[in-house]
Image (cartoon, rainbow, N blue to C red; front, top):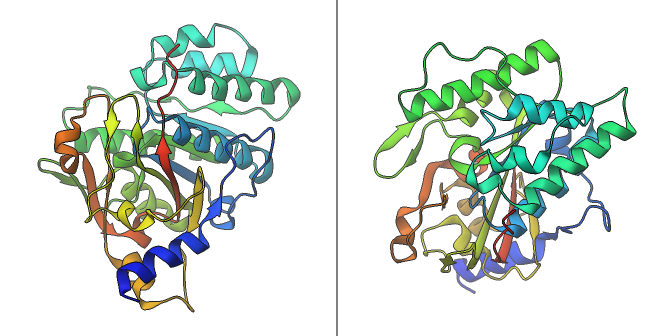
Length: 306
């Protein structure tokens, strides 16, 4: 058996099925996430339904089982305070608030997350969940992607220190993985928000990276190129699967080598061209440094617009 085939078979055998409906089948939070202070849920495609559902499942478990009480949702820079009010008090219309947030949040799956957070607060009025927003807006708008990363990390660090709440960060792969540095084409190479958080917090910042094989979201997404991290996951057959990246011993050499390779993973936003799929990516340090958990959906469909 060659190393590539051995790797694919091992990953398929050790990937755990991840149910996509927490109301039907709750999941147990992986210990490395449960003991963190901030957990990043890093999605490679924000418009892929299965990845949003997996995010909801993990968020649900982190709140219920591990005591996380704040959620940062990328794309709510303007609407965060109003969403926080809705979640905590019921004031406002969440669909209208999401309709004025970034485009990838204007979907029913995101609305379900917000409504679930509101239901938690209704059932636990003395132990509510908050939506993280900027407690001290920057004096000037960010003028670069590097500045955006610094502002994002600053928002979380300030919230964590002042509110003393553990935070789930629901965002995009380019921002959330531990990139120290990370590169997005054509030439944006610098430490990202996840890299800043890991430098400040150590392993009190943990990451689950969510990615996919192929499908429609709603644009066609072809199978990943052979030099992408996802390519090794092709034999996984679960609708969604969870893989622990902390493999310390007793694994084949091919697995160890894969974990120590540079991360090259998908980063697909609202603007995407399948003919140039290879250009829509993030490059960063060794895979096992960039994320602690990998969530993989072999086939995805699109989220449902509001």
